Length: 153
Image: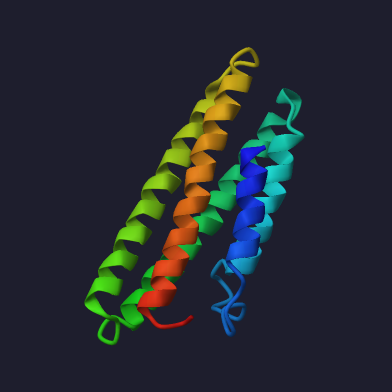
């Protein structure tokens, strides 16, 4: 499934930089978010309409973790605003904005899935998977751009 491939690619491409795992306790770290994405991917793969409510709750939790990660990225960018190169800073801001848009898109698909009937579930799930793939790509880009802007390679 595309989502599984995206999550695995993300796990391989985004190794933790030293010091990232110990961010603020309330923040979603890259590692914990990566694990959440992989878990959600498996749940989507194994999903049946009888377990819809549990899946919707899990999707909501992952989206909450992504929102927390967005706030962390914003904070790191702001903390290093003056030392960041203008171009890299602008690229990082653009990447974070794209991540926010993709998160919103996934939230919309989650709502559509929640409201769908069992008959339309398969097409809803495909649309959600596409939106979720884009979210994973946007997250990867945002992490990379913010890291580059604040020189944490």
